[in-house]
Amino acid sequence: MPALRSPEPVPGSRSEAEEPPRRLLELQLSRGSAPAPPRPGFLRSLCCRFSDVSSQGDGQNLVTEDVTVVEGDVATISCRVKNSDDSVIQLLNPNRQTIYFRDFRPLKDSRFQLVNFSNSELRVSLTNVSISDEGRYFCQLYTDPPQEIYTTITVLVPPRNLVIDIEKETAVEGEEIELNCTAMASRPATTIRWFKGNKELTGKSEVERWSDMYTVTSQLLLKVGREDDGVPVICLVDHPAVKDLQTQRYLEVMYKPQVRVSQNYPLQGLTREGEPLELTCTAFGKPQPTDMRWLRVDDEMPQHVVVSGSNLLISNLNKTDNGTYRCEASNAVGKSHADYMLFVYDSRAGEEGAIRSVDHAVVGGVVAVVVFAMLCLLIILGRYFARHKGTYFTHEAKGADDAADADTAIINAEGGQNNSEEKKEYFI
Image 1: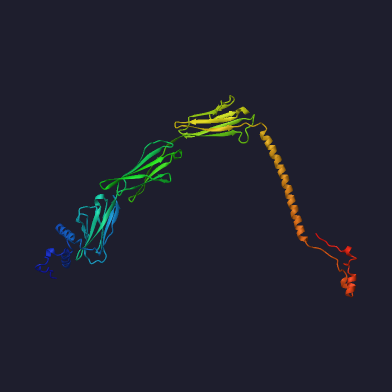
Image 2: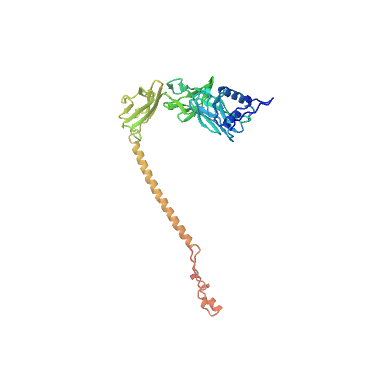
């Protein structure tokens, strides 16, 4: 087959050197040989030529998508042709350097690897992505006129470190402490959330930018109580590059003692004259109370009262023991107390009360039985009257039916005036 030759250049038209590279590829294919790898000068000419027409091409036959990738991961760039006509596809980096021309990689960066190449797609992967790789990557289709479309790679950087700084390692009940959580060197800026246990709190955040990275610091002011001791305060980060990134600090709160007085004997009932009384004082605090003592408010402690640590014992109560007894406990934070008011009753106060309560119960039972019996009687009488109301019998005109005529009937009637005493009526 004779070799095909390009037509002679026409004056005023483009020369063969200015013809699109596609024409050169067609000439090589018509000779039955595969196209040789493009020369560097050819690629530079091709890039320049595309840079001249990129604003003219509308990319109507090219399809691609933006890529978001976490720093250090793999990004995949896909240039697809909707209606393939065997035109050349190439991929350029943000500096307009050719990454792949068809299935050939002129760029020396070995992080770019060919994933798939066909007449309808050029797919390339970029490993170990860094911030410097962010930008626009251009898909070009060598048609007449050439077409171009770009995809944007966005690189996400998770926070390098997450730290909580607390103003005081140990706080006192009622104090307001300051906590700061810092998320350093992220992109984009993080959102910091605070939690105390399962309850979300509100902090105040500040963002600082260093080059292309962001550092976020959130401040939390917290008034602590004894119930906060041992509760975790959590700093949680919301960022598209990372999930469930958090750190926490446990609160340590000191508080003064909480004091309670309990009666051991008698377990229940009245404190009566001649009987014993035993009280126990319990106190809890942080730190644990080291000093605990009993005293009598507004009077001296009776001599027969025995105090042993947290216990107070009176073996034989009398009315001179009446009064308020106080248990005091203290620690490094402060002092607290609890009071017990003692009133000594007569020795038979409880028994008389019990007898009176029994008498009252008996009387109440008798009255209840009488009332119940009266109600039953009323119900029976009411039903009897209801059944016999309006029922009566008369014996008037008895025998009148057997008379031969009316005169005889009148004479024979037992209801006449002569027999009026026999007329009876019954009413109930």
